[in-house]
Image (tube, rainbow, N blue to C red; front, top):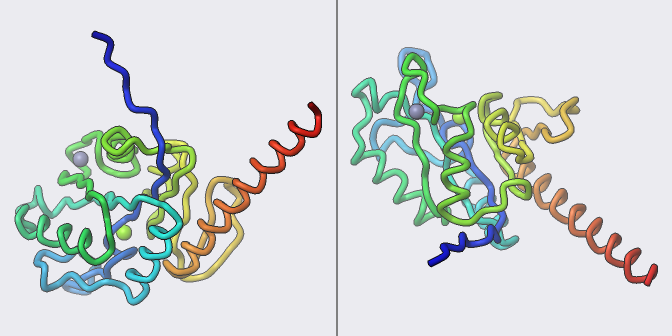
Length: 200
Ligand SMILES: [Mg+2]
Ligand SMILES: [Zn+2]
């Protein structure tokens, strides 16, 4: 019997977690990830940003490096509780986690794009029409590596020299950018169809 793979059909936004959807936890003056559900505090525009993306038809995924799992500070059950909350409150379809430290040289830690490909396979996502949003260059790089468009959150807006990457200062403005790019892409498609039809 021939096995026919499902054709990729949807587009998605791959969201980094710490510093993007929720605030970092400061320990000894350093930014870290929450270790308990009680320490997970969403950024103020996370709910509205996620809702706008979902209304526009995007599936949402969290892709996150959590090396504190391997270090023994972060328990899997706490992590699962946090991600269940993100599913409930933000409508995230699934969270993909790299639990390794950099020393492990695994293939799932961002900037590697393995977790994006896994999600794309699991949920039939069209990666070239999808976006990644994060607060670190490694988030953007993971997206660019997989052929996505990247939005990097920064403290000051600036032009980008990489065509597939933009900067935004808030999650809200990142979403506005993404929706504008989606509109532009569909307008270009309609124009091409009109040209094609009038050439008939
Ligand atoms: Mg981050
Ligand atoms: Zn890993």
